[in-house]
Image (tube, rainbow, N blue to C red; front, side, top):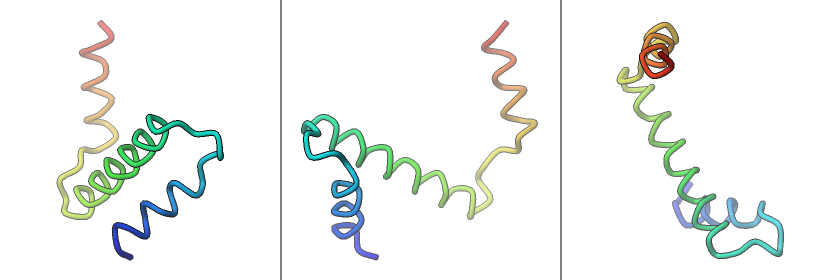
Length: 60
């Protein structure tokens, strides 16, 4: 699917009263989500245990 079509789908799912900031935020989240999925498919992700260890460092 082309990027323009994906953007249209994201925008169409938002409420009619959405602001430009809401639209930009939704598109940003979609782009980041797709980027993360691509990284996982390429073996660049971290395991659940690694993520938990990282969070423990922040929560101390």
